[in-house]
Length: 207
Image (cartoon, rainbow, N blue to C red; front, side, top):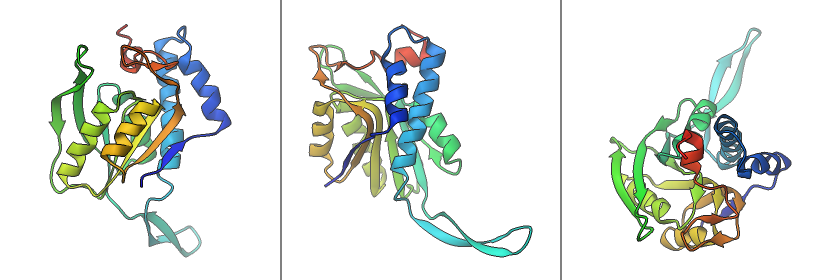
């Protein structure tokens, strides 16, 4: 069964307050998304496999460790782009592939409009989206990544709803979900409450 990991850290709580504030300007909102993405990635990468390598220091040769897997970052367009850059900076050897979904506002269901993968598939993948609301885009995104041939997937989001977590866990019980906050639930428009509004619009200043 996949794990549900809600970060409990003073820095997460501190940055979340600014992120939720409706008066936060887009440039600061993007900075907070970046900071929280790094904290999520730190937690999500804790179990990545390592292999030993020999490194020549200025004084001698010593054994060090490096990542022993191909890791893909798969941001769900467009809001996932606000997170993937920070994680890519932290793990520069990771690959970045993209999935695009938009939400049908009448049904609240995801509609796929873009997919960019290439063979062979990586060993592991992080599916990235700031908001895990209904879970529809996340479930479909994980479906596509597994169809690609990736064996180990994790979901990284800044805010999640209980409904979204349940839907992901039901459809993909082997997938870990990492989030900075689990909120109260969804409103009648399927937005997370208390949430932070539309993450994509706030990241890209398209309100």
